[in-house]
Image 1 (tube, rainbow over the protein chains, first blue to last red):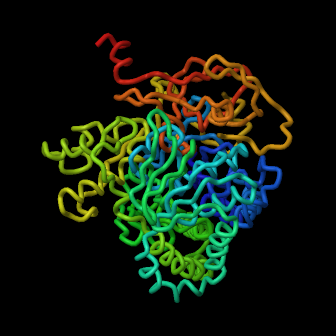
Image 2 (cartoon, rainbow over the protein chains, first blue to last red):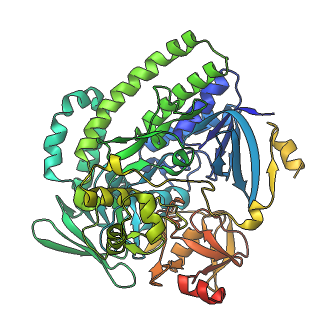
Image 3 (cartoon, rainbow over the protein chains, first blue to last red):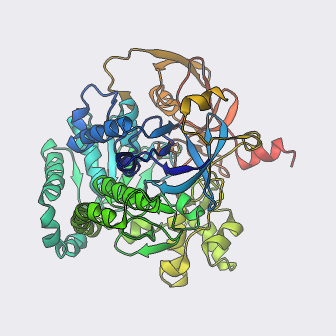
Length: 469
Length: 103
Ligand code: FES
C-alpha cells in the first residue's frame, strides 16, 4: 500500500502542508531529521530550554502555534528520520536509529529548507569559526551561547542573532558589517513596493537600532576580512575606516541563505539560476509542482521565501496535492488559493528589497586568496582547483573527478556554490552556463551494514510498525 | 567561551569526552557536550591534518565528525548524549587511512 502523501521536512512549509492536508481528510506521513518539529526557524519554539524564550522575539514565538497545530492535526510525524533517497518511482528510503526503511507514496512534498551561503574568507576552516546559523541552533536547542564573539557579514539573520544575544545579556565583541554602500542605492528602487510590507520593514529597522543602542562596536562597509590564528581562531582583521582587528575565540560568519540543493538535485528536478538571489532555484509552478509532476517543493528549499513565505507555500502545495488526489476540485483549489497567493506576492516584493540590500559582494562569495580552502572536506584550495581547471576540468563534475573537491561527506553542500562561481569567473561565462554538481543518492553517509538490511513500511499505524520491528 | 543559559536542569547524564568524565543535561547534543567541556576539536582535516571543529551545527558541513562509542564519523551536532556515552575526537586523515589499509 502506498501513502497518499509523504512530506520530507517538518519546518514551516512541511508543517503547514500537513495541517492543510489534514483539514481535507488526508493524513500525511512527515519525515524529519530533527528531534522535534519546527525546522531551523522554529527549532524548539514549543519546548525551549531558555528561561525566557520570548527574548528570541515574536517571530520565533509564533512558531509555537504552528508546531502545536501540526502536532494536533493527526499527521504521522517520524522524528529523527534522515531521508537519503527519493526515487522517481515513488519510493523513499530513510534511515532511523541506524536502520533503513522503505516506503512508497503517490505524492511527495519536499521541504529541505535553506543552508547558509558559504563565506570562504581566509581562515574559515579554523576551529572557533562558525556560522550565525550555528549560533542560533546552539541557542535554541541547548541554550548555549559564545561569550564575546564577533559576528561578521551581512543580512537579517546576522542582525537577529546579535540582537538576541544582547537581549539575553551575552557580551558581543563586535558586529563587522560587510553590506556594501552601493547596495543601499540598488535597494532604494525596490523600496516603494516593499513599503507595502511596512511592518516587516519596521521590524528590520528596529533590530538595527536595538544593536546600535546597545553600544557594541559596529563596523560598516567592512572589506578584506581575514580570520586570525594558527590552530584555532584568535580574532578577525578587516578594513573599515582603516585597518581594524578584534580579538575573539569565536567568530560567527553569515551572508545570506540559499536553498539546500542536494535532495532536489538528486531527484533530477529542473533548476534555474536566479540572479536576484544569486542562487539556483527549483523550477516550479505557483503551487510548487516541480518538473516531475508528483513531486512538489515548498519553502526555502525551492527558492528563499523566509518563514512566512514557507508557511504559505506549504499551504498552496497541499491544495494542489489535494486536487491531484481528487479530494478537491480544481475550482476549489483556485478559490482557496486566492488569498495565500496574494499574500505571497506581497511578501516577494519585500523579499526583492532584502535581496538587493543584502546582496553578498563578489569579494566574499569568491575566495580572493589562492590558499583559501574551497572544499573543506577534501582540503582543496583555490590553487588546487585552478590547477585542475588548467588541466582541462571546465565544469563542476569534471573538476570534482580531477581534484576530489565535492567528494567528501558533505557532498558539495559547502563548496558547490563556490566552485560554480569560480569556474564561471575563469571561463568568463555566466554561472548559469557552468551549472552545478550532479547529485546522486545516497544523500548521507551510510554504513554498508545499514545498507545491507532495510525494512518496508506501508501502514499508517506507527505503533503496529514498532511492534513489527 | 561557550556557556549555557539554562537555569534549571532537571536531569543530567554522565558522558566521557576524550577520557574526561562530564556531566551534561540529558538529551542535549553531543556537540553541546563538547562545547561546554571546552574540548571543541572534533576531527582532523583530510590532507593537512589540521584541527577542525563544528561549523554549522545543523548537519550540513560534516566538520563535527567524532567517534561515538567506538563508531567513527558520527555527526556530533545531530546526535544526542546518552548515559555512559564515550565521545572521542577523531584522528582520521588520508594518511592514517592509508596506514590502516596497508597502502
Ligand atoms: S557542525 Fe556541520 S554537520 Fe555538524
